[in-house]
Length: 330
Length: 266
Image (cartoon, rainbow over all chains, first blue to last red; front, top):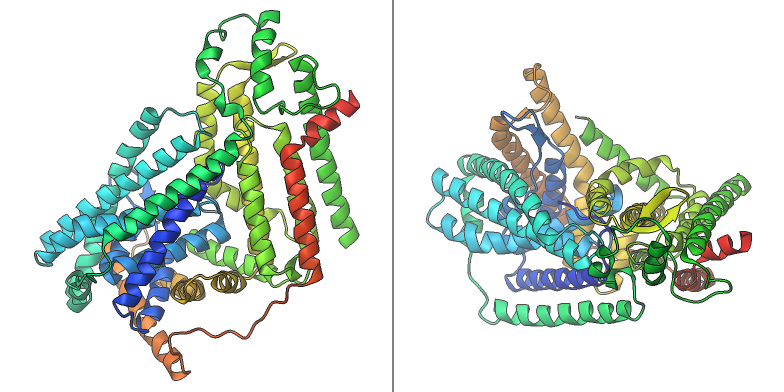
């Protein structure tokens, strides 16, 4: 579920980074309000490393011949509490981004939101904790884990679809993408839910004090309501997203032409007529940039050729320069 | 398990590279962080059908990778991680955007093809940019820099400690996995029914490890703050590099070098 950079627009990436940074800041505030004993710091660090290692352990999924691994958001929240869990998961995602390109740099905010905030905060608070509070029996833990993992993953994959759609780089229609993503993550969620439950039940039988201390520690600081956090979050999102969009739209890009104008002429044979129809389109799309330069007013095909030839030359020069630098360095 | 061992090797080789002494390594971490972010944002800000405009951005990795001594073989594994998501989007564009953009000989190039290539370019360039950052800047320097920019200490400690104990816990998991496979030679992976106790065991070991780490830190006078003596001076080279980098970046965003070169040749 790690999103890469390529399908993201700077506006969506920036807005989601703002949301995630604000949520993490809130988590830090909550942790220090709750009095984070310094003992928890090394524990959180080690648990981050645990999630990292655990994600690399593949297991066989019975009856399918395929393998999978866990995401670990709800598991972390059940072991450490939701706010420390979010911070731990954010650090895991940063390491994955920097060292493995698993999730992009600009997509970091999206990934923290989809995998961290959805699972550790929303799903844990809304679904896991209420069920767990009814008593940490094996059945309750199983139910709480499956429900919270499944719904957390559904929310997360919905986030992926929405963020990709709003970025507008991929042309996959919103509905088809949704139909593709949600059922897959339903299956993944069921399996991860079962595994999360069996890990938690194992720990519950080995060291019962661990889970209950987290599940029942629910004293909410009265002066820090969720509403106070969400309002600035929304404003921040709108500001960053809106600001970046305005910046982007000052330089009209290829996304802005209407598809209807094209589809009408799409069936026409590849004759002069198409060139004429497409001429205007190409001018506004990216292959030929819309600034004017000497000789740039020619037929679109000429500009397209210039673009292709120029791209090959650029690539060759870049390769040559790189090769030369490597030679000089030696 | 190859992935466990492979990941340790991956981090290790990057971190070794980050200890290097090239001019790029010596740049201020803030400069590298800022230029990388600016580069990625600029690349992503290109319209989704732009191919020629993005081409010039390859100059950055082409010049910096040899200067910093980063081998290209590191790129493959990272591309594998980023590609599935990009390929899904790129392939969907091939399918949904079939209107011809222009005709080359008898071959009509569709907007879908253009955007597919553009998405692949963006994937390659953004992955290369983060690779350059990670291979020239030690992780501790990045987190230290983020702390100086106002990131709370809890988080920077978290980053540093996660990274520090990765190796310990991965080798812990690896030895558990070896023990498991020795006892069940006919399976190559862990059975799903055993995952509960396997991961549960790993959680307990991690908790114990965390406890020990805490006690060791306490013995050395840890009081909730991670002190570091390292200081980075902002030198003339940092200012010059930032200025040149950002102006070239800005110029290439609005001036299509490829089309210009193509016109020259014609």
